[in-house]
Image 1: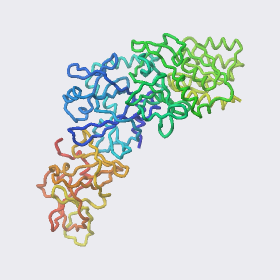
Image 2: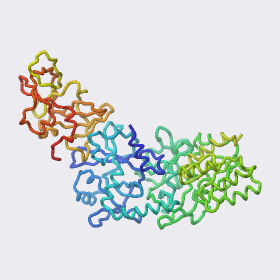
Image 3: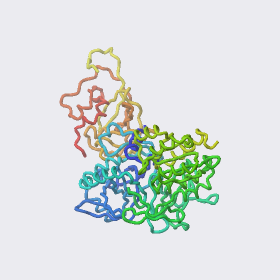
Image 4: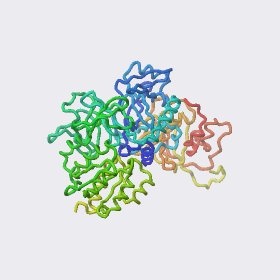
Length: 448
Length: 157
C-alpha cells in the first residue's frame, strides 16, 4: 500500500532517503463550515517566522533570507477561497509558511497553522479522485480521521505557472549545479549566538520540533521519548533559552541510535560549494565558510553527538577490539575534518592523507595500515590510479580498500572494483561507511 | 437482466431498497456489502461534486458518494441522519449516501420494465430499469454506472 510513498521518496529524496515521511498536518476552515483536514508532506522545511511576504504585481513572494521565493496559497490552490482572500488573511493574521523544496526549486506554501509531524502509511487515492491531481494519496490518522496528502510535485508545477521566468533561471541554475559537482546541501541554523551555523544536510536524519515539556531529565542527561525509545538531546550552547514553543531538533543517527541536537531556529537550506576559509581550534566547529555571501560556522556534529552518545549504552558495541590502523585519503579538507573525528570516535587509529602522492610517500616510508578508505575523485592521481599503485606493491596489496565517492555511477563502481576496491560507499553515507568498515574488520580479519 | 415479464416461474431477484429525495431505489443485493452511518467525513477539495468525502470504516478508507448530488436532487433539508450503503468495487470501498435504507425486497421479473423513455437524462444514466410495485415505482440503480462519475452530467457546484 505504500508504493506512492517510496515513489515519492525516490523522486525528491536525493540525499534524503533516511528522512522518513515528515508530515505536517494543518487545518483550514472554509467558511467556518466543517473542518477540512489536509496533511502536508515536508521534505526540507524551515519554518519561516516573521519572514516578510511581498507583493510584486499581485504575485506574492516570500522573503527568505536574501532571496525571494514564490509563495502559494494552499487554500486558493485547493479552491477553498478566491484569489484575493490570501491578501486579506495575510493582513489580518499571522500565518505559517511551509517551505518546500522540490528538485532544485524552493517555494513557500501559505497555510493557516501547522499542527504536528506524524508518520503515516500512504494509501493510494480512490479511482474516482485520481484526476484531482493535487493529492498523492490519503491516510488514516491515529484519531481515525481520513486526510489527504498534498503532492509537493503538484504544488511545484503550480509554482511553475506563476514564475515562468524564475523557472528558466532555475533551469540554468540546475544545469550549473550538475556541472558544479562539489556543491553540498547545507542546513543553516542558529543556536546560542547570532552567528549562522551550517551542517551538511545529508548528515541529518530528520528535522523535528519537540515541545519543551516533552524534554525530560533522566540519568544526568536530557532525553525525549522518540518513536518508542529514549533519545538523548544535546544542546549547542551551554545555557538554554527559556522558550514556550517547540524546540527545533536536528536528529542524527549514530550507530543506529538517534541523537537530537537542540537548536534555536532553522534558517534555510542551501546548496553551496563548501570551502572552509578559516580553520579553528574551537571545539565543535570545523571552521568558517562563506555561505550565501555570509560567514557561517561549519559545525562539527560529531563533537556534539559524542556528548549524547557517551551516555548511551550501545554506542560502542560496533567498535573494533583494538585500534585498527586506518588511512583516510581525501583531497577535500572538509571531508577529512568531517570523517576523521567520527572514525576516531569509533575506535579507529586514523591517519590522514590529502593526495595519492602523500599515500605513496607513506608507503615508501614503510608505514602500514589495516584499512584504506580513499576518495575516488582527486586531482592529480585519482583513487583508481592510487589503488593500482597499492595493488602493485606486495607489502600493501593485501590491505582492503574502500572507495568513497560523491557520485554513484555504475561505471565508476565497476572501475573501482576492477582496480581492487572491495567496497564502494557514498561520501555522505556515514552509516554505510561505518558498517562497511566493521564488515571489513570482520571479513578480512583485520582486527584479529 | 431480461425484461421477460410473462414468465412467472423465473427466480426472484433480491434488492436492498433505499429512499432518496422521496423516491424508492433498489440496489441488487449481491452488490451491497454493508450499511453504515457515515461519520467523520473529510471533504476532498477539487473533487467531483458527487464525492461527499472520505471516511474511515474500520480501518479502510471509503469514498462516499452523495446519491442526491449524483441524481441532481436538491440537498436534504429534513435534518435526518444520513446512511450509507457500502459497495466494494475493484478492491476499493464506496459508500452511497442515501436518506434512508428500507427492507430487502425479493422481486419477480414480471414487475420489471425498462426505463421510461422520458426519464431525466441523469437518472437514465444510472438506472437500469424500473419495478412496478403496489406502493409505487422502484428504480433499479446500476451500481457500476453510479460509481462511474465520468457519466455525470452535473455542473460543478
